Image 1: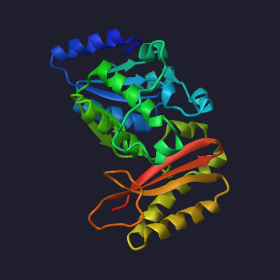
Image 2: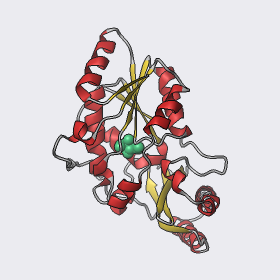
Image 3: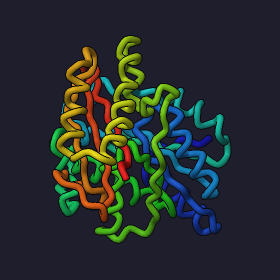
Image 4: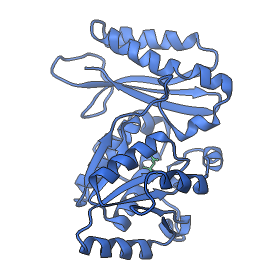
Length: 283
Ligand code: PAF
């Protein structure tokens, strides 16, 4: 498996592969790969001839320096995991911060037509400017036919679709369902940092989302939201940051539902200092 560290070299290699009519899939990651990432890579292997996996902890998308410092960095383990899927059809791009940003580690200021304003955008200031900046750069370097993103970061997925539309980037953005542990906890690189006790408590997040979905069928938005807030008030190890029901298209929080629209519930919870997010389709 080839591991590239420099953008010029990987760009040239991919360009050559494309002239040989190879289809290129791309799975951008921040490393600390888990089965959710591997499922994205497997899907991409089925739908493309070659899959590029980037491993890059992007500094501009972290609002807390502490979180950036503590983000797990496990490149050798990541490469070993990827080799279990394919030794010849996966290439890794693991650039330095300099390779991506040069001397100027700054995010572009984007307008994603309001998709960026609520939820993660509200609670993590500048987060989506950072994500947009790095994803745009990575897409320009890799120039894939298809790029794969998980629905756990549903807001991010919608924003990346908007980025691709606005900049007319020639690729398909493919969203993939949320992968969960048996307990229901959504897979995330952050799960590695949970203590045993926190790990036992965390599945309550998805359980609550499923119950909220049931309630949403015949209760008002306000009632469902109050129920969720009360459910977390009883949780010693989990602190609710937000629970929001939003229109799937605009990602705007709603107060009243209409039978003609599709909605999703979004949640962010702290287990100690570890922030976990999840979401569920409601109708
Ligand atoms: O979802 C992630 O892991 C990151 O936000 C991404 C898309 C790789 C950009 O750094």
